[in-house]
Image (tube, rainbow, N blue to C red; front, side, top):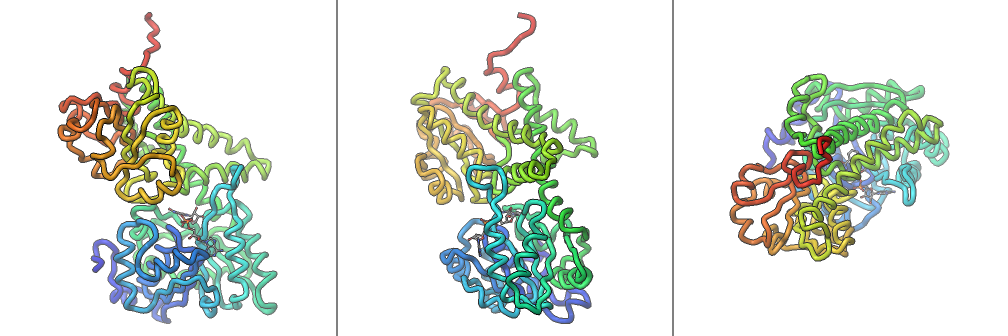
Length: 478
Ligand SMILES: NC(=O)c1ccc[n+]([C@@H]2O[C@H](COP(=O)([O-])OP(=O)(O)OC[C@H]3O[C@@H](n4cnc5c(N)ncnc54)[C@H](O)[C@@H]3O)[C@@H](O)[C@H]2O)c1
């Protein structure tokens, strides 16, 4: 049973909490694409009282969700599916025909990085739009949630207009999504803002209909920003560019600290007290990864280039570069801590997901570091509490361990690259008994370093003085 604290309202409370518009009755909603975003969105919309048909092109995914077994790990999702199932308000299918009669069609398909380029691959968005078009009426609304390049919303509307029944005026809002994996349900039920990109003669009615979808959250006071299409498209990529820049900023400071002998964690604490800067997203370490930040900053830059505006976003190239260098830094550090080379060094890689509380390994720093070490002749053994199936799928060449202890058995170097609670709270005394050499790299500045040092470990955290001491120092006095 979901608690009020976790999800704000219970299923039974939801209609009561809604405003007068909602009293006109819940809506029929279609959700296209049920990955990390769409599955959570579908479940949350049903939880808030709407009737939802969720379509995915992947039959296995649809079947697993229909059976209440999410095909990926997101905390609370399985419980939410179980709570919503008895209401009969949530259907997972591969059949677009079941979306006929929907009031609102959410487009939640992926927009990955193009093969062999930096731009976003929007083919899934257009495919979904083409599949939805025959089911549109002049009363229904299409709502794009995927992260897309500037100009996509208008082009998607034109694509659907060409395929919709002749008498239909296609209505479309772009409504970017800001949920964070690991807390996706909380973020969907209690977002920090809604952004509606609207355009055209139906804009006012479109806003009213989307307000009915989000009536529960709006009644809770969630701010709503109404923009044109281009601004809405940019809000998402601008937000992710800002966050990526903040992470790479502190990681650039980490590079300086490592050479000059400073402590980036203290530095972040000190500058973070300035409320214009803030402490959040100033966690120095192996940098960002996942299915959003890396590909979003690259796609934003690629689109700016296409628009002749490359210079405006040229700095994102450096943001990406700093991020990649942090991975290289760990690879180099392993060699430094092992007498200069990688060949034959046994490395325990703790973590494979790009962040804790997720099984998402897309552009994962941990897996990229593990692969680079193995390429250089190290023997790596990877363990992650939730991401093992995905990791084995994308990096089958790596060796995987059964648990943290197994990964660390006879290791020369242990590298904590995803800050899962079980790694943060690992017992350094007990772990020292299973490794060959007690040497640990804290790739996320997540461990209590003094406890590890007290237990006899050589403890190296990125961007901190202890790590710097292992480096050849460029001393201006010598
Ligand atoms: N994952 C996040 O944390 C997050 C947060 C905010 C925004 N976004 C954005 O949301 C979008 C989706 O991201 P995701 O992480 O959920 O991706 P995902 O790869 O996990 O899911 C996409 C799903 O769409 C399905 N799909 C593809 N084409 C389809 C079609 N024509 N018809 C039906 N289903 C189709 C795929 O089978 C897959 O299940 C992306 O644009 C992403 O940038 C993601």
